[in-house]
Length: 495
Ligand SMILES: NC(=O)c1ccc[n+]([C@@H]2O[C@H](COP(=O)([O-])OP(=O)(O)OC[C@H]3O[C@@H](n4cnc5c(N)ncnc54)[C@H](O)[C@@H]3O)[C@@H](O)[C@H]2O)c1
Image 1 (cartoon, rainbow, N blue to C red):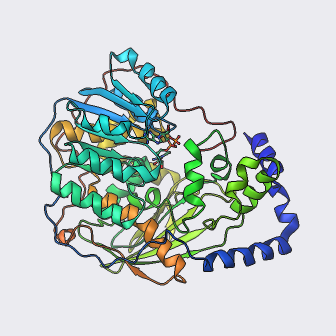
Image 2: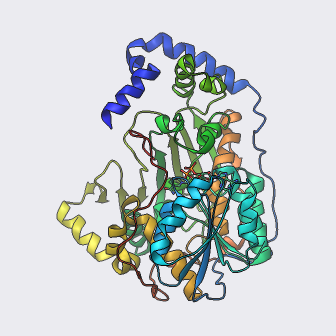
Image 3: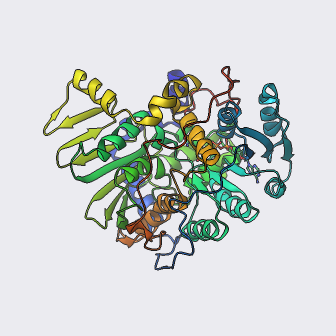
């Protein structure tokens, strides 16, 4: 993998960046200044919308389903892993599969043959997914497509009587965030954004510790998505039709906030006792994307379309103030050479936690706890879900087990008629930080209000349940999972 990375750097010429130094950066600075001033046609509006809630989906439990019949849309890199997880669970029937590309759909159909599923396959047409949503014997539509398709698909599915699970982020802009909320309230269908990082072990541990008062009053939290995806964004064999690069070549802000944000919002009971008030976002210039596009275009005409685009800058830092006077910092950088980090910092009046750089740490007062103390805290505060299915989740795998836990928990809630851990207000709010950050960046980091998608019900909504006193009954019925067959990731590419 290291060699591939070196080759990529050589190819794009970025290996010489540190040597070229000052003049290179000066040139880019001028270029970036120009882009900041240029009119971005997609610039989001500032929000002033307020509305009365029609029906409260927070804490809402839909009638229980003994058997959850699922249809999946989008079977590229991410979708097949979710199909695989679901194929192992009691009470799941995989009824339909859809991908625009026939080979992707067929690959996944074969993958689940072993379990006796016989899904209808929809493919070969950009609107074939509508037929999947129209299929009457489906309860849940699971969407793993490029971002701009998430909300249109979810809204259509809910309007056709389906619950929806959507990969992150759920929406691309504020109008879409509102559409999700309004449709879920109107149809009484669940709309869960599948923020898997809420199910990572340390995040669950700190949520439980926060609940039990370990940190005292929590004043400040931090999260991030710092993950070097420069190479995969520019890979012709990576994302379908280069969709991720296209998102990054004209939207200037914190485009992927939910991995860092979701877990800390649960710790702070956002939408359930506190709410976000306003944010400011500051973005660095783009130091690498346009330069990469230019280098690649020099030898491959395909990349000409990506030259001199108004690229998002390397680092965006967003700071959010909450109604209760607490703060959240969320960072986004998916182009710089960095070790992966979601930060996950919790800072309270009695103690703190910090996940990255790993290993994760907890402090009491001003000192980190010892390894031995850490182990006993892990035992004492291990959340119920981890005790129940943690080992199985690790065996099944997928981002260290969190992908399995999120899928298991969704199905278990639907089968037991329980409210979901992440409701439509979380989906809308966590996703809205991207377009709001774009607005702030485009306006010299001025502050912007953050909409209250709950229409005021945040004051009385109850915190997400982590005790698992109800439910927890769904078994894993197949012990030898088939290997997820997501599109092979080009060597050296990190997801
Ligand atoms: N939670 C996580 O850790 C995580 C990790 C990776 C990706 N994701 C999310 O998963 C989603 C998918 O990402 P990916 O990496 O799988 O992308 P991908 O490009 O590998 O796959 C997208 C798939 O959607 C299909 N598609 C495109 N248009 C379609 C249409 N009109 N109808 C049906 N199918 C269509 C494509 O053919 C492709 O197979 C994104 O939202 C991404 O943010 C989440």
